[in-house]
Length: 237
Image (cartoon, rainbow, N blue to C red; front, side):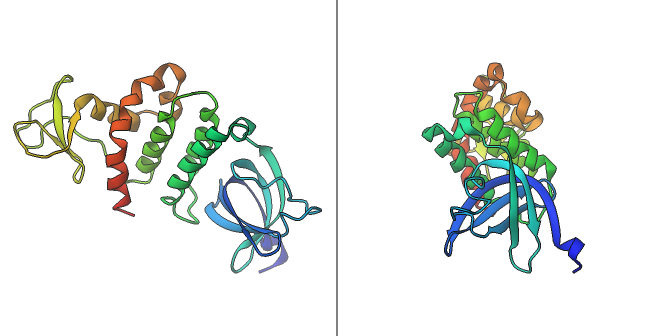
């Protein structure tokens, strides 16, 4: 590897970090060009190190890296956005990092995906604009959709073909993402049709459109579906 190819710049988000050795950090980075990958920040916790105080979790910036056979090294980090509004409130910070950690385990390493980067960044930006806790659930649904885990759920009975009305309850088969009217199946997973409609709307529309303050409140009922989706998705990974 020649000298020119050993060094590179990358913009991205620091989404996790771990202390190793004497003052070193391992950072989980989601970059615009390289996707998710781990890097080493040597001496980042030492008082006179140029990285000290800069490489915080939930920080957007531009890094200067050295390629290595194992972990690449972060040599310099220019902070672009610290997301201070998230970090100054303990409850908000815990809320955000819990959803980021939940999302991170589904992200493949070393795969460039600008749409996922934009979704991560938008989630962090929108948290500061809304006081509803449904934002994180919508973020996860959009992420799972982009990763190919979630399909649309038809609102027609999979057995008799009946089109279900908005005031009806239905039976949800989450294994096959199908619904049945109450007379066509004996499934225990009863659900309001409106919840399924809201789920499908989330798949249709852009994240930023859904989470506008005057619109996001219409999706509060989706929280009734989240435990079922989480259990289903986690069976696939």
